[in-house]
Structures are given as structure tokens and as C-alpha cells.
Length: 489
Image (cartoon, rainbow, N blue to C red; front, side, top):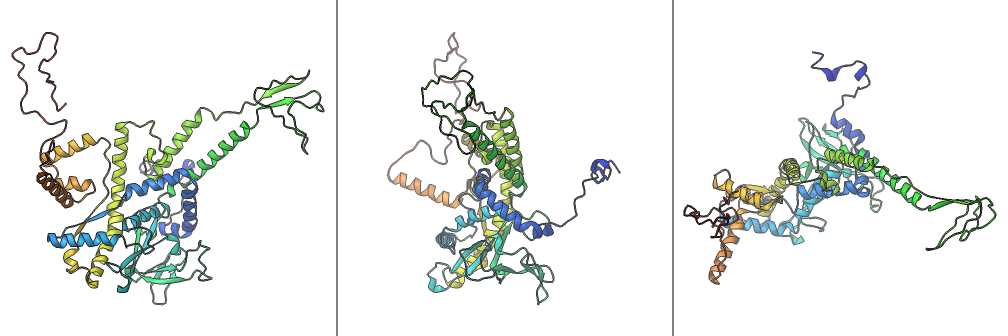
């Protein structure tokens, strides 16, 4: 039993290891504000953190996680898709971006703040929107961590979230203004306002069961990023200071001035400057010692690499996405790293972004569109949809496409799955292919291969050359000009 429970030993070796048994909600409530402030400062001032944040958002949502309606009625499906596409340009309540830009902002907030709130804002008919609904993004600071109390109605308020007696979220108590925004002076004290839970989407990645607030994605790497940044700044200042001194002069008679020497300052120190090509003749007893600043040493590069490697592992991002350094990467290592990274991103795409953000907005948008008359349909009938994440760029496009073609031919996957993996809707692709083929036929155009013909470097020839009649000459050359190598190799 002692061998199996080695981690629970209390002997000399582990005597000082006594972490408190605290719930993650207690940790977030006590350290959340400071953690959030440090996280935001890091992303603004630290180059590696800023680059990692952009890489995280670009891979999580890219140019948008887009819906593909599963309505069987083709006419209704096209109507829904076109109305949605037109509404995405009006989705932002601030008017700064579209719906997919809001997705990117939410992804950055998840990296920096660990969570993001989206408030569904119904609009009036006279506002002139296609669908009277807009989205307002709220930062984590808008929901106070310290607001933990019991409401007069008997509900519990924990970290700004109100729960009923059976643990369901019924409301969010938001601040009226951002606590760090000094330009907004509408109220003297940051008062809170109660917003029903059905009007708010809470976007965050739950790490532990029962977790009610999010943790910044950058949290595990914050200490290393901060200390490495300080170390680099100190090293840069040390080299800069050392490089300012070209040499040090020792004189036997301090009262005699050298060529180019200025008057001494209050501390008695003087500086002598030389023009290019100047040859100085020293008096007897004078000596010059040139400055030789200490180098950073041969271990600097290895130290930086290992530290940044640990930071990348803490962030869950590939090393080259954090640093931009691909010197030690090759095709195999880069592909293996990206495959594992994309699995993690896929979890967030489907479990967080699609489930917590896209699906509730799609349901509310359909209901609002039907109630406003912009769409004539049953919201339940039009609700089936699948969300297509952005396509992954191929490491080796030729090999990846050939592998997908072989998988389709072997029946291991469908063409729909292959097309959706590229981030496009298969029905839209088919319509474009049909339109292109019809236009080419009407104009009498012919191309090398159509979408249904075999093409590519791995196409197997229908007839192999007959080499049994001695067509190959003595020196091994093939006079027919046909390579006998199997084109599949």
C-alpha cells in the first residue's frame, strides 16, 4: 500500500508538500481579479504572449465557424442560409465587425480572460435590421468575482452568477461599466444590474466538474513568460550599457588633457571621444584598455529554447506558433505536432464554441426571424444544422488530397465529410461545380480534367509497355521514353 500511495507519503522527502484541498471555484473567487489583470498585461506587453493569443484565436475560429443547414427542403434551406449570411453583417451591437469577427474576439477573450459573455439584445422593428437581434460581447471583469451572497428571493449568488435552489443559472449580475475604464463616468460606483440567464451566453472551457467561472488559457505559462521577459530586458540593457564604453584610459598625470577629452563632470569623470581614423599618441605612463563586454555565453540559446518550449507546452500550442522559430522542425515533426494540436483545438471548437456560442445563437436567431416575419417557417423544422469549423491547411497538399481520394474510393469516408473538412458546404460546392460545368459547355470550353475524372501524379496508366521483345537497348535506356517505375511509388 505504501508503494501504491507514494504520492501520499508524509516522510522527510515530501514533508513540505502540503497543498490545501480547495475547490477551483474558491481559487477563482480569491485570485481571479489579480490573475485576470496580469494576464491582460502580459498579452499587451509580452511579444510571445501576444503571438500565442493570435495563434490560438486564428486556429480556433479562423475566418469563422459557419452553419450548414440540414433542412431537407432545398428552397427553404437556401432562404435560411441567405438570410443568415446577410444578418451576420448586422450581428455586432457595436457595429465594429460581423458575427465571425465576434467569434474571433470571443476566442481571444477565452485565451486572455478564460471566459466571455455574450448578451442577446433584441431590437425594435424600426431599427431597420433584417432580423431584430444583435449580440453584445462583455469581458470577464463585467461580472464581479466578489459578488457572493444570498438574494432576497432565496437564490444563491456565486461570483456574480445567480443560481436557484436546484442549481440552475437564472441570472447574471453585471456591472454597469467596466471597473478599469476611466473614460466611462456614468455612475460614481460600479453598480450591478440583473440580467436573466436566457439573455446571456457564458462562453468558457470548464476544467473541473462544477466550475462556474473560467480560467485564463495563458494562466499556466504566466510566471515563466513574465520572468523570461524580465531576463531578456536585463540582458539587453547589460549589453547596451557595456557597448557604450569603447575603452578605459589610465593617465600618470590626470591634469593633462588628451585629444578629444572633455571637461570633468561633478564626480571628476571625463569622457574622451575619437573621430574615425584618429591615431592618438599617449604620453609616458599612460595606458588604454579596450572594453570587452561579457558575452551572453553559449548556454543562452539552449536556455531560451528550453524555457520557450516549456511555455509552449503550458499554453498547449506548438513551439513554432508561439515563437515563429521553425529551424529545428522538419516535415515529420511538424506534422505530428500539428495533428496533436488540432485534436485539442477540435475539442474547443465543438465543445465550447459550437455548443456554447453558435447553437444558442442559431436557435434564438431562428425564433426572432420567424416572429419578425423575416422567415416564414417553423423554427423547430428549420433548427437542424451542423457547424463547420475552418479548414486546416495541408502540410503536404498533394499527399493529403491523394489520401482523401483513396479513402473515398475505399469507402472509408464520404465526399461530404471530405468537403466539410475543408471548411466548405458540400451543396454550395456542388452548385458551383455544376454552374462552372454548364458555363464551360455553353462556351465550348474544354479542360484537362473534370471533377469526375482521374487526375494527378498517381493515376495508374491503363496499359503497361511490353518490354519482353527486347525494346530496351544494351545500356539500359528505354527507347520508348516510358518509365517502367510503378507510378504509385
